[in-house]
Image (tube, rainbow, N blue to C red):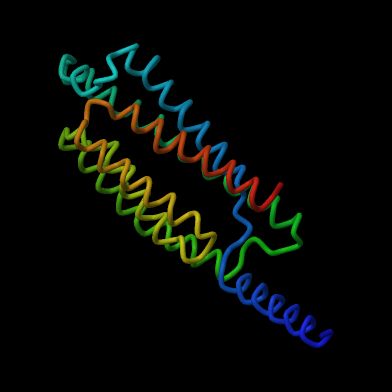
Length: 211
């Protein structure tokens, strides 16, 4: 009986070692929570300050502006989105490095590098595509583009970390596709996809793996 118990414990230990060697497990749920809060804050800044309390149907709002005003507004929105992205990445690194140290693990490993590459390929592609949409004045497709390519990045990276990342990616893709059908509600879908989903995911991950 003791031998059977020892064998089970050995199998569990081997499985844990194999999982840790093939998956990046230092991703913190708190990074998702703060990324979501940052995304919501960025959307509110865009609505109340950049769009000057414009209608939620921002594409209609933009049509009423002059070419010079539209050009200025585009770059302000890009700056806002870029700031949200930078802050989200910084939060992710901060909390994940902190979790890795707490667990006595290295943050920068071959697996974390593969995870980063898997994320960056769809993200960079999506960033270039969205920039092209912006230049060609397809404003209504920018939020769907962000959500869809971000979702693809998460799905692509899901095999190198927690399985929940894969399902978050699927939800982001669905949200992006839905927003493409009602383009005037881009800000609402941005808040839901990048804000609410991230916060729910982050809290669930924190409760499951860190609390």
